[in-house]
Image (tube, rainbow, N blue to C red; front, side, top):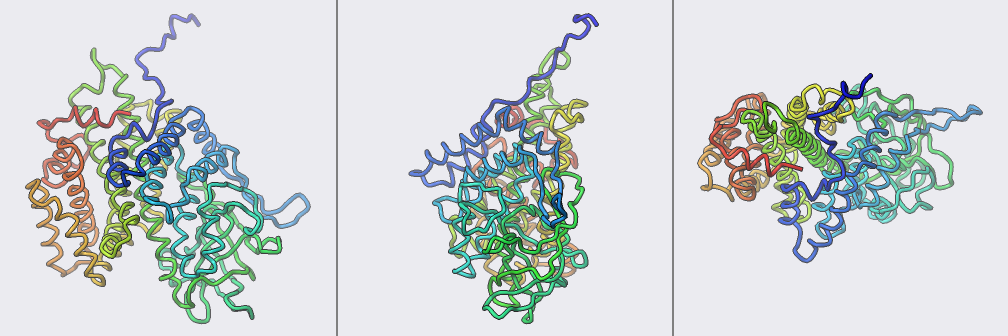
Length: 542
């Protein structure tokens, strides 16, 4: 075929070779806001290195390869011995190793540790989201382990380590370790108290043998797992190592890997326990209370991870429309497309600002901030993760047919987008947890109202939305059936408050007009045309 018939024009260059962190104004401003001035330069340096890696062609290729070659289960070796190992593509190990080396499993003891880790998690999710699961669980396991100082002393330094060791060996001889979690059983789902896994105590204090199953056990190549099982004293939390101190494999039969919609680089398994050795964590009968700190931390990571997916989708859409020309000019300058992009950018920034504010609450660790987290984490997890899938779908549409092609990376983002809404309790569970906090912990509502009240008087639409939430709270009839509506409004008001205080006026104005003032439609791209949309889009440009 003659070369003249195949001239490629009006196609944007790939979005590569850029700093994912440094080009994200909402995120860089949040880090500056929440990190102590004396630490800011160092944190920016760390995140800049991670951001440049995430935006590099090499790491983007790792992400594509890890998803093109999903994990493979090997139940037996060539001689018939049971091994229960999962083989991952080398790209997966490179991604995970880089993330561990960047400190994405260590937050609890570093100054500003949660903010710097959340920012890094948001950045690195944009390279590839599947391997974020073991990063999140390893980070989040610390609160549960700290209920047993002896266990924490042995495990916490390994979990916070920047050394990634993929081999299964006794943790006593490893320089770093990963920890997973297994609560869900097929007959119970999110009703963890329906778990039927049994724990029989041994003669040695705190040691048990487990018999049962877990329906979803993510990242089964981890060095250990926090699981729930029924002990004589009731539902209890246990630490189950993959390899016993003497070097033998613990009984951990991986029956199959799930064939999932997205998150394909990550292994999610069904596992069986049959006389599996485990160490009790916390008191018998206090399993939910012991593991709830881990659940809360992973729920925040769901919001952070979704914010990362949203940011990458918006970055790709704005980038494409900047270089694509239509009717004699850049697509990004066309009024209707500008409206769509601005709407997407506002949603993305609201997610980022909220996620980073909650990470900062973990760092502050005051009674008031802990009270805020008890109500704001499930609200944020509910709303931010719910908004992820429609945002990614709209961003994909901005690329037209190009966005529907696997090579664009947008289909992978779209398949990943629903995950965080399901993981660690789906929407109804989060909404009911908001009600639980309202009913049982008056300090949680006080903390929420103090937070949103800091912006009172700055925007009449926000003030009206705050009054609307108070009206909803004053009417408790049928409150459970209205729990989603209430949770959505509380999350929107919190986002609006944060944007009014910290975002540029054009971003806050667009959010309050459309999300709180009713001047917006059900689809993206329905912002009031009179707003400064060009500035909103320019701010989102990668």
